[in-house]
Length: 51
Image (cartoon, rainbow, N blue to C red; front, top):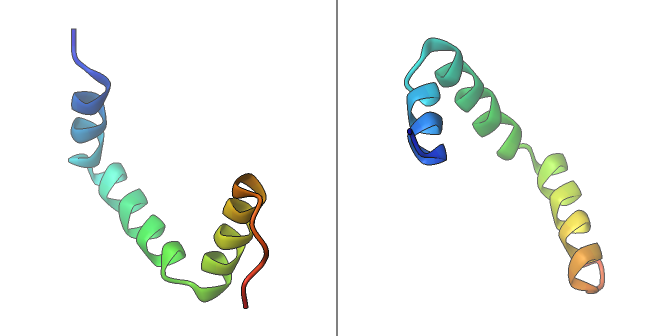
């Protein structure tokens, strides 16, 4: 039985997987999305919002 990691690796080697990886990289480099992620993580950590 293939492990979850093997399945993910296989998916990322497909054309659709590569397209989704590029899309995720582009979204991750957007400063607005980075700020949203920081706010989301601070909620779980109980921290303050840093500007």
